[in-house]
Length: 145
Length: 82
Image 1 (tube, each protein chain N blue to C red):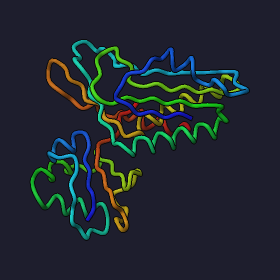
Image 2 (spheres, one colour; image 1 turned 45 degrees about the horizontal axis):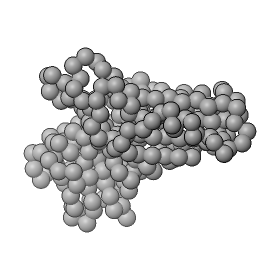
Image 3 (cartoon, rainbow over the protein chains, first blue to last red; image 1 turned 90 degrees about the horizontal axis):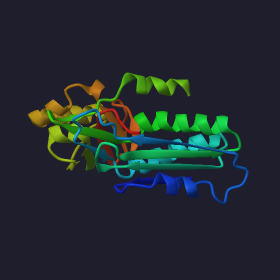
Image 4 (tube, chains in turn brown, red; image 1 turned 90 degrees about the vertical axis):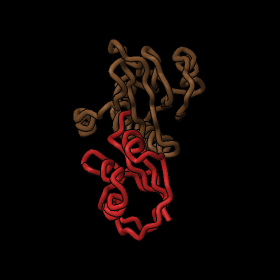
């Protein structure tokens, strides 16, 4: 299990190349990458987080995913700071014996990271700055797990 | 003394990211009432508690939770990770 909360960018290719290496019995690797959507006019996004709690919350979520789907490995990288449209915000990767577990665990991780990891996004556009509001459906998504 | 932290628009309304607060509040809700009585900026930040979340010692909690033994309280809007 590897959890990283960082200001710097990351190379998706390098991360996936390394991921799961050295682990046995892996038949499937699934990954998801979150990207700053260019909604037209978005200048930049600033991501604030709660140092300490962020790492704790992500670790707890990842550990639950590993236990529940018997993952061979799990990687979460989430950035904070200033990002531009098109930049990668975060990624998760899951490795398991079979694909269903890897897909499900990745979805579980994403649903929980969305509303249980202490990050807040602020968008800066031509009309000023605005905090991104949490959506009801993001909270509702947790009930399926 | 307790460390109180604010994030996102809560931090902006209050005007600082953290402060040390001398309090004898029994619960989070009591602490919120004490802060609101201080200055209008706290009133503005805590006007609608349904729009806020609270963490005690870095774990998500509730407004009716007791503060006994807690060292760090954080107030913030619903999280938007991912």
